[in-house]
Image 1 (tube, rainbow, N blue to C red):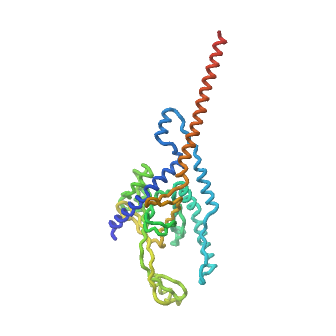
Image 2 (cartoon, rainbow, N blue to C red):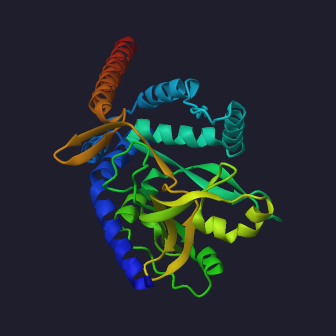
Length: 357
């Protein structure tokens, strides 16, 4: 497939994903601004009150409720546990896998990734964390699995046709990010710094993207493939391509093929780094799932569209009412105090005039 075809298909997939998520992203952004930035007064009313010299108090109670939910979840974390489940399973091997998983989580600060995703899910209805690889050292080729946090959930566009809670059925996903032009040109020498066509993302993140930055898209795609597997005499099951590539090693170990090959349905996952004009990188991912995991709040399907909600959505009107009544009571107290001060000043002035006569 040529680069032009890849870019055309990626743009079509991105437009579908952006359209499917537009309403959820707009509402989530409003929730985030409301609960975290304290933007709780309608702009027209706030401007009118400010012109009249009237107060606009914001007594934001929502962060405390969000932290309560998040902290409860932190104290009751779900854990990944491997169990031996058949007659050939080894409890000792299962415990080794448990240790490996705990090591991956601890070395990559997975708790931070989980908590960040949960915080966004409680606030706006969705958050994400992702699985990645990184080199174990600067002078080697060994790689470690890591759990990475997604600090900006608006940078991710999932598969609009996905229905699984853990994204295991996603066939497409995008991670949109911006880089300084100097960093972009140093990493991809000669590449044309054309922004990825992500108008909806740009509108969410503000005008600071303009100028000395380039927008790139990380496109994940999962395709159905057929694989041929072999049963070996030592109990292993490997792909035929792996066996052929390492046949000399298997022969030296005295390991051969047992029975007939079997064709199985599987998936191939490909990661591509794209700009609006070029395919910068293509990487074949080792797994069969797109390594981006969503954390959802409340999920509803209404009128054929999926709506994601967090704690803030139904708390906006009560919070506005609370702000209004506290502002009103403060304003009344201020007015009464001001009138009382004027009355007292009038009495003092009157008494002074009478005594001077």
